[in-house]
Image 1 (cartoon, rainbow, N blue to C red):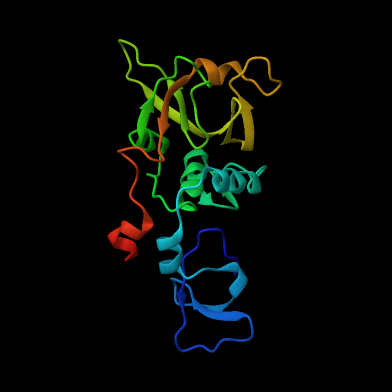
Image 2 (image 1 turned 135 degrees about the vertical axis):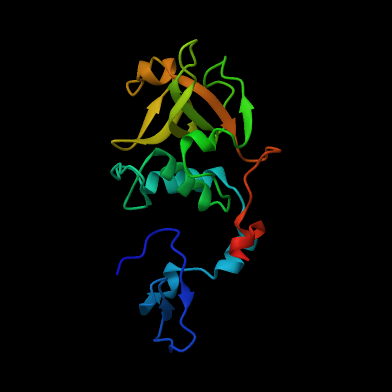
Length: 200
């Protein structure tokens, strides 16, 4: 059975360790083994982990090229908000599931200067601007990684730029940028795994 990044399993207390392999139990009751180098004690990890934009960027690039799957949150395939949720999960913070929910987290950053006032880890939200007939609709999210670039999942995980002089610039993203939200360090920062009752 495959294990993916961020998977949570319990140690099989009736099993015996085999060399570097730890006995585990999956949520459906199946039992097996994992190499100890591929896992961490969850409680220890949740206490030690801190939001780290360098680690998030590295994690994002480790997923580069993975396919888009609507509703997906696995490192095998995910949608745009599943991707940003996974990046923040690996830094210990629990983002909401969908882009339309994630846009309510963190602190709003003025987008008038486009990319010049942004910091790595900021989330960029795209979609339909509100009109008299229709409300605003957030449909896409990506994570800013610095130097005008953001990484996101649109067909596959890739980078685009907000700088019109770059070859990976797409006018759509400039025109349809609705919000920029700073998650790390904001007064509205999402709850951490160590503080969430489900994980304690």
